[in-house]
Structures are given as structure tokens and as C-alpha cells.
Length: 255
Ligand SMILES: [Zn+2]
Image (cartoon, rainbow, N blue to C red):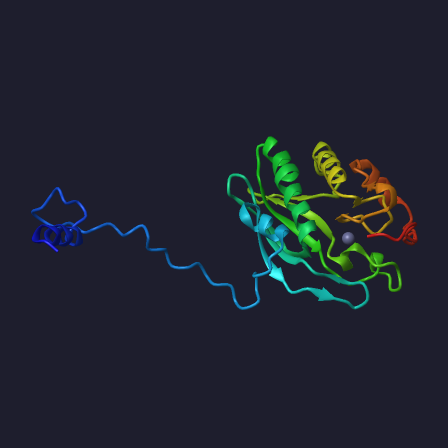
């Protein structure tokens, strides 16, 4: 190797900007050096993430994996997540409180509901959504908590019960309260019924007077159920004046 080549090599080692020869300047970090590896998944975790979960945890949601649940009976599912928050397009988060344990495909439906319906509707009203109240998600039980009834979609981690929404200003919007804005509740009802195959609320079967149930049950002929009466305050006061009647037996035993 000639002296000239050695000098060039030495110069390159000292400094990347060979033009300024007087004072060697620090070289920038070589681009080839990879940044430290992100947290390694613990053995067995996340290595077989479903395509659904990869879509979900990209930019759309904060959701951790849940080990598959098999039984008892038909309960459980393979691709379960703990849905902790929905990430909006402006990167703000809508918390699911407490986090909902649901199958991934249902979590995706919730994420789209929150992003495209709930937060959009509230944005047009000049406010924003802070959190969604999860009243019930995965729960291995019969419909309407009746032992021996057909398995609820909650038992398949394919359903969510929501009582209220919390806004950024701290206001809590109860979905079934007739004193809340009627147009807001009608808008929310319409969005939910377009998106989910089952929506049950006040007036459905007596079990959903104080929360809204949504699920993605599959039925023959694509039949859908949208049973959520958006009530007027007057209707409630009339109902309260009546002698309380025993709860009707559910006609179809859903929920
Ligand atoms: Zn329910």
C-alpha cells in the first residue's frame, strides 16, 4: 500500500469531511449501525400475531394479546385482545375503561365505530371523546345472564356493552338517558345499527334499559337487529309513574 493510500485511509478514519484537514471533527454515526432492537417479544408472545392484530396495533389502537380461551362449552376464542384505547387520526387516544377483552375482528369494529362515528359525531358538536365506558365485554354466560339460555355473544368475545361516553371536558354522556341530546343519541344509534349486526338498548327486552349492547352475531340471511328506542324525557316520566311491572321475559333472549 502506498503512503498516499495510507494517508487517505488515515484521514478517513479521523474525519469524514476530508476537506477540512486541520481539526478532525467527529464522524456522524454510520448509518449502517442499526438502532438498538425494540423490545424483544417474550418467548411465544406476539410471534404469531394475526393479520387482524397487526392491522389493529399499527396506528389504530392500543391492544395487547390475550392467550386463547377454549371453553367451557362454546365459550372463548382464538384471536383475543385486550383493547385498551383507540388511536384517532390526530393521534389522540380514546380509552376503553376498563379495557375490553374481545376477539380481534370485533375489536376492529369497535375501533372503526369510535374513529368514524363516535369521535366524528362529537367533533361536529365542538367537543372530543376521552373514553368509552365498558360495562361488559368477554363473559362466558347465557344470554341476559340466564343460566341455560343460548350462549351470549359475550361468551364468544364478540360483544360489548356501553353505558356512557366521557368527553374531553369531563362531561359524561349516558347513551340511554332521555335527558341527553336526542339528536346526538339518534346519530349514535344510526351509526351503531349500520355497523353492528345486533344493537340492543331501551325498549328491546327489558335488559338493556341502562346500557347499549352491540355485537357482530352472524345470522341466517344476514338478519340484523336494531332495537334501541331513543326516548323523550316525557316517556320516561310517564313510565316512572306507572306501577312497576315485573320484567318481561326476553322474547328472543339475546344480549
Ligand atoms: Zn351485552
